[in-house]
Length: 451
Image (cartoon, rainbow, N blue to C red; front, top):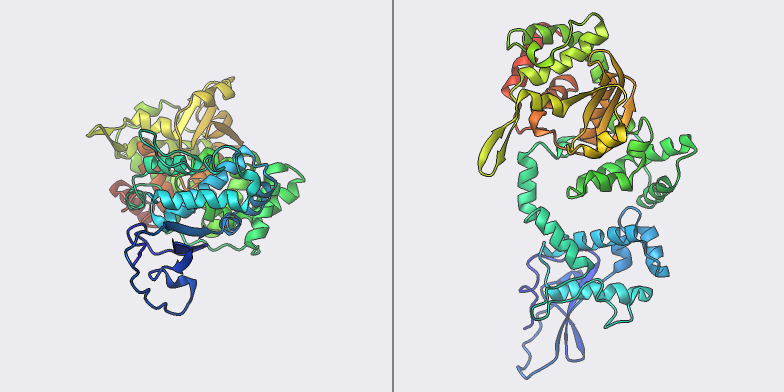
């Protein structure tokens, strides 16, 4: 009996059907009875005389692509034979994700070959004139030559980033990333269909105005955007911003996405921080000589006090630790401060500054004096987002961690954990697995003072 268990270790689901061609007769596999809802009878043993055996999976390419956000446009481009570079990259990501979901991160050559053939069979204008026409998508290994093609290269790159999905899930659970995974998302926006969300996302990629329509479409696509970010943990911030350029380009979109995601926490910083400042100073003065690290004047206004009470936190909380070449490396207080807020003189060349920054997570840039800034920016993915005040920059910076599902910078992770759990009230289990002792201590002190 011809079985598929040696080729596929996981049950098949989705837009494919599986069969084994023996000679000229097409027979369904007994182990994959999803072709018919009724139980299939076992196939009787056949003679062992030599026969032509072919492995075949019928992929429905159009359904696989169209099921994703923006997929209808990619299908149309594939039908015309004009597949832009960016659309081709997106299509390859979809194909690789589909294969990994169904067959694991190392699908067999037969599976990848069936997919490549299905692409050019169902979209003949993509067929190349050389060879069989599908080799650009996948070419099997031959002799000393490794397998290659768009699909193979994508799978190989994903495996490099995460050895397998189990390791990825364990790493995300243990690290400070995947903040959204423990948050219940209760969107209040009007529900739109998958196709409508895809059309709006396409419109947003190509239009900057009218601004009212940009904000409306960004609001209506917020839920699908959160799902996209959460379901593509391997994507970089740059890729997400390319997919949704208005997140950073249009003022207020980060705040809008966060409010739709977590409305009860949206205004927490502005409502609570002024009440917390005095208690934080009182607590900090009992911890260490934090003044030696900040080297700033005594605050003379409420605004200055609010800024300084935030800057105190990296100085009194334990600095982050990471593993480097088998040894623990602890950040200094200066490192923690720099990953949280950077101070630069007035007139700093912003394009040159962001080009030279290597920190991936968002942070605040202050130009002028720390307690009386001339300009404030939030820096993310080599982009500078201007904001009206330090407190606004702090708010936008924190919300970026949630909207883009980013981990906190390791140097100042406990500082951001304090804002998450004590200020925004987003609870246990996000950031570090358990709330840090230093965060618990300060929170308890503030609660005891009825802050």
